[in-house]
Length: 294
Image (cartoon, rainbow, N blue to C red; front, side):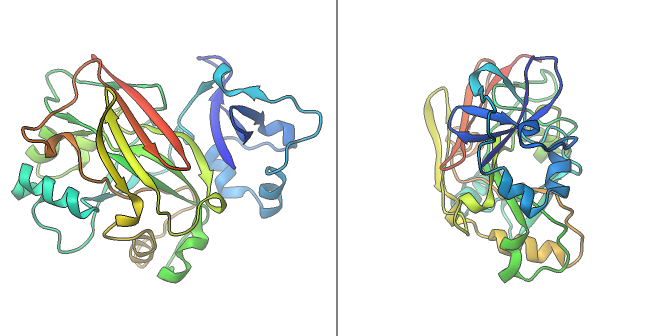
């Protein structure tokens, strides 16, 4: 099952839609349900209601997906997105080659966060911020969304806490990321967290997810890996973090990016105005954004 947040008009109200047949949505109201937004649904939907969403409602007319304005599936995350740094071996090597001081040491998992005032969406514009950012980069990542509060979760039970999966582009201003000796600012500029196009519920994807993950720029394939190659696995991430912090339902975890980012190319090749960035993960879909002038 795929869950979308959409608007019927560009300046309209955010609504939740369920895609049961490719290319069309049933409005959540067609199932006799009402949630304020996707965060509310994730936190409060019951197993019985989830089962109900898997069957098309009688007499309801689906809405063609190409006639609505899709938003990020969670437009306003309740907390910062939890991120994993250099969590693929080949990306670890290319990052260290670009800046050994900033990226060259990984004794344990590297965690950081992204502030997201509003998540960017499939089709949204990634700002350049001329005069502030001079090395704009892309990073396709598998996003994991938790469906219930996780505290002190054993690794072998981590799967039980996953609501679903999405695609995240961890857009990064490399000059800010390395110049400030920390990653928060360079990762958190407005528009630098495209998420989408939807949430695929966890029951649709075998665990642990072993999915092709790719990113292309202007049709040129740059990243091409597998989510099965994570250094720190999803189960290990949830188990380690939940030993000392409550991971609330609705938490979004960006699990890291494979090799092929712009800073890893020789010479580095960063994004420019007009570039089209397409992130793709098997069984989830594609997330496409255009780089625009500030």
